[in-house]
Length: 118
Image 1 (cartoon, one colour):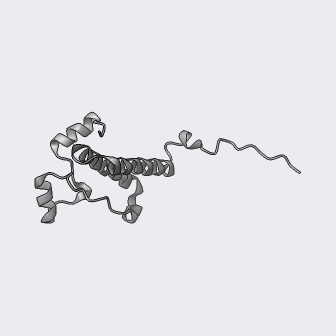
Image 2: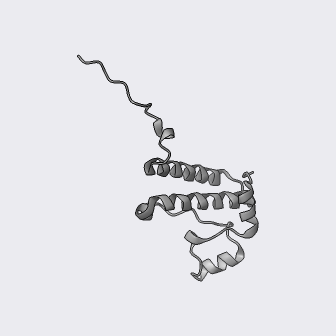
Image 3: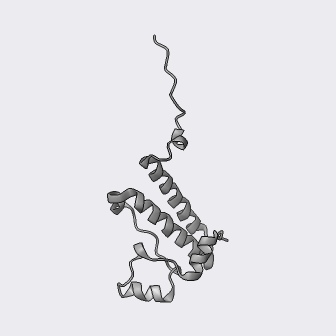
Protein backbone atom coordinates (compact mmCIF):
# COMPACT_ATOMS: atom_id res chain seq x y z
CA UNK A 1 0.00 0.00 0.00
CA UNK A 2 1.45 3.40 -0.95
CA UNK A 3 2.19 5.92 1.73
CA UNK A 4 -0.31 8.78 1.98
CA UNK A 5 1.00 11.98 0.51
CA UNK A 6 1.08 14.92 2.87
CA UNK A 7 -1.08 17.90 2.07
CA UNK A 8 0.87 20.67 0.36
CA UNK A 9 -0.53 23.13 2.89
CA UNK A 10 -2.80 23.04 5.91
CA UNK A 11 -6.52 22.65 5.26
CA UNK A 12 -7.14 26.14 6.63
CA UNK A 13 -4.66 27.73 4.25
CA UNK A 14 -6.90 30.64 3.27
CA UNK A 15 -4.58 33.05 5.04
CA UNK A 16 -1.94 32.69 2.33
CA UNK A 17 -4.47 33.09 -0.50
CA UNK A 18 -5.92 36.49 0.39
CA UNK A 19 -6.06 37.68 -3.18
CA UNK A 20 -8.31 34.90 -4.44
CA UNK A 21 -11.91 36.01 -5.09
CA UNK A 22 -13.43 33.05 -3.24
CA UNK A 23 -11.42 33.80 -0.10
CA UNK A 24 -12.24 37.50 -0.31
CA UNK A 25 -15.95 36.65 -0.68
CA UNK A 26 -15.84 34.40 2.39
CA UNK A 27 -14.13 37.11 4.42
CA UNK A 28 -16.72 39.66 3.30
CA UNK A 29 -19.51 37.26 4.27
CA UNK A 30 -17.97 36.76 7.70
CA UNK A 31 -17.64 40.52 8.20
CA UNK A 32 -21.31 40.93 7.29
CA UNK A 33 -22.37 38.16 9.69
CA UNK A 34 -20.36 39.77 12.49
CA UNK A 35 -21.98 43.15 11.74
CA UNK A 36 -25.44 41.55 11.75
CA UNK A 37 -24.77 39.91 15.11
CA UNK A 38 -23.55 43.23 16.49
CA UNK A 39 -26.77 44.87 15.27
CA UNK A 40 -28.95 42.23 16.90
CA UNK A 41 -27.20 42.66 20.24
CA UNK A 42 -26.84 46.46 20.17
CA UNK A 43 -28.98 48.45 22.60
CA UNK A 44 -31.51 50.89 21.18
CA UNK A 45 -30.44 54.38 20.25
CA UNK A 46 -27.13 55.52 18.85
CA UNK A 47 -25.29 52.18 19.27
CA UNK A 48 -27.98 50.45 17.20
CA UNK A 49 -27.77 53.18 14.56
CA UNK A 50 -24.01 52.80 14.30
CA UNK A 51 -24.33 49.02 14.15
CA UNK A 52 -26.87 49.26 11.30
CA UNK A 53 -24.61 51.54 9.26
CA UNK A 54 -21.69 49.17 9.87
CA UNK A 55 -23.84 46.35 8.54
CA UNK A 56 -24.74 48.53 5.56
CA UNK A 57 -21.06 49.16 4.82
CA UNK A 58 -20.23 45.47 5.14
CA UNK A 59 -23.05 44.62 2.71
CA UNK A 60 -21.80 47.22 0.21
CA UNK A 61 -18.31 45.74 0.36
CA UNK A 62 -19.73 42.25 -0.15
CA UNK A 63 -21.90 43.37 -3.07
CA UNK A 64 -18.83 44.79 -4.77
CA UNK A 65 -17.18 41.36 -4.59
CA UNK A 66 -20.19 39.30 -5.64
CA UNK A 67 -21.07 41.12 -8.83
CA UNK A 68 -23.90 39.34 -10.68
CA UNK A 69 -24.72 37.01 -7.75
CA UNK A 70 -25.60 39.96 -5.54
CA UNK A 71 -29.33 39.69 -6.27
CA UNK A 72 -29.47 36.40 -4.32
CA UNK A 73 -28.64 38.02 -0.98
CA UNK A 74 -31.47 38.52 1.52
CA UNK A 75 -32.46 42.12 2.25
CA UNK A 76 -30.93 43.97 5.16
CA UNK A 77 -33.00 44.43 8.31
CA UNK A 78 -35.11 47.59 8.34
CA UNK A 79 -33.05 50.64 9.29
CA UNK A 80 -35.59 51.66 11.97
CA UNK A 81 -33.93 54.68 13.61
CA UNK A 82 -30.73 54.61 11.51
CA UNK A 83 -31.98 57.10 8.92
CA UNK A 84 -32.22 60.84 9.40
CA UNK A 85 -35.60 62.54 9.07
CA UNK A 86 -34.78 63.73 5.58
CA UNK A 87 -33.64 60.24 4.54
CA UNK A 88 -36.85 58.72 5.92
CA UNK A 89 -38.89 61.23 3.93
CA UNK A 90 -36.91 60.54 0.77
CA UNK A 91 -37.28 56.81 1.29
CA UNK A 92 -41.04 57.16 1.73
CA UNK A 93 -41.34 59.10 -1.55
CA UNK A 94 -39.06 56.71 -3.41
CA UNK A 95 -36.25 59.24 -3.85
CA UNK A 96 -33.73 57.29 -1.77
CA UNK A 97 -32.41 53.81 -2.42
CA UNK A 98 -30.98 52.11 0.64
CA UNK A 99 -28.33 50.44 -1.53
CA UNK A 100 -26.73 53.82 -2.25
CA UNK A 101 -27.62 55.64 0.98
CA UNK A 102 -24.91 57.27 3.05
CA UNK A 103 -24.99 57.71 6.80
CA UNK A 104 -25.92 61.11 8.23
CA UNK A 105 -22.92 63.36 8.86
CA UNK A 106 -22.51 62.80 12.59
CA UNK A 107 -22.90 59.03 12.25
CA UNK A 108 -20.43 58.99 9.33
CA UNK A 109 -17.85 60.76 11.48
CA UNK A 110 -18.37 58.24 14.29
CA UNK A 111 -17.99 55.36 11.84
CA UNK A 112 -14.81 56.84 10.40
CA UNK A 113 -13.39 57.32 13.90
CA UNK A 114 -14.12 53.67 14.64
CA UNK A 115 -16.65 54.21 17.41
CA UNK A 116 -17.30 50.93 19.15
CA UNK A 117 -20.93 50.01 19.76
CA UNK A 118 -21.85 50.34 23.42
